[in-house]
Image (cartoon, rainbow, N blue to C red; front, side):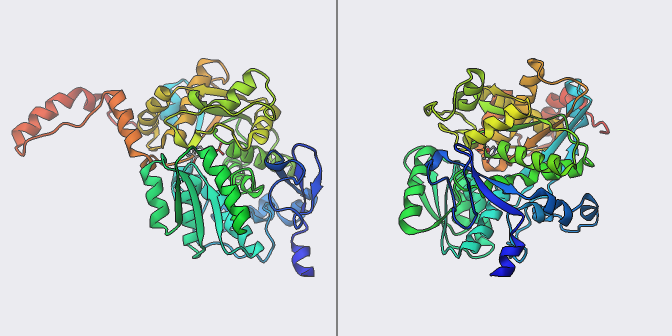
Length: 437
Ligand SMILES: *Cc1c(COP(=O)(O)O)cnc(C)c1O
């Protein structure tokens, strides 16, 4: 016990974002006892101690190419066992052709569509599994628009951890298939994500299950922050000027902010990038609050509608962290229509070879909107974060293709008919002649 305590001493407290009260990590699991679901907690660290335990030089020699390379910056005991599925250290690639299309000089794409279950949520779910073990929980549960559930399902499958998932019945079928293939117990809620979230809270309390719910569980931000740590390390600790990310509950953008603040406090990066949150027009709670200077603690939920199911949230659960991320970094929220999101799917895929789900492509649509609005300049160093793979939602991709007016040609099984068809593609073949990056 003494040893365990000692190895956890870099975590000072959990601090309520509403009242500022701090709790010992052993005393509170989820939210502030005085402020309920609004009382989101933020993990406080002893950065002096962390700075003595881990240096940029150590990372240079670190051969752990996963999110756990930053375990000194995570709320883990030194002896914590980790799930075997490799999460994190996804590629950060230069997107020079895409940049050239818009007159940009420095554009990178961080590709979290390459996570084991196909979305950035694996970073949070991996940590949830470790924290649940620490608590000795028999069952883990979560509510999700789909990806957090798929991530938890996959991580649990890798360690045979029983889990119960609440998703809206309307979730894309590929995401529901993932849950069932991984062997989760699945409850399809006849309602919205917000309904699934409330049901999951009630059930977790009734049965004593460990709850991974976004924002409600303070550690999800910590898992997601590893994407910011990776971006900065992959850029040689020269932080970008702006990062674009799509926003539903606001946990990813809050996680980005946390990771960047960690690095800034440690003195590993010199400046904080502006965080640009991209919301869908029909699910723009945070965009509206930001534009109208509304208090997100009193602003009522909205009816959320968008094709980008992963950012459909009537009451963003991590709204306090999301607003702070944009405000404190002098960033912005931008808002894009479903049509712009659909357009962005083939545009991103054709511009850099990454096939994203609607919520992933939304980050790119947001970049185009920000360029249009003069929020970014051509010589800035910009990163767009792609949060999920397009294979998660093929019907939306097909809709995007239809909207773009491209379609496949059916041919008879004769070379003559192939010649006829190729005759019609000649101009396209000339236009898309390959060019080196
Ligand atoms: C969850 C998710 C988001 C949004 O993250 P929040 O933390 O809810 O803001 C964006 N894109 C994808 C693919 C996601 O799964």
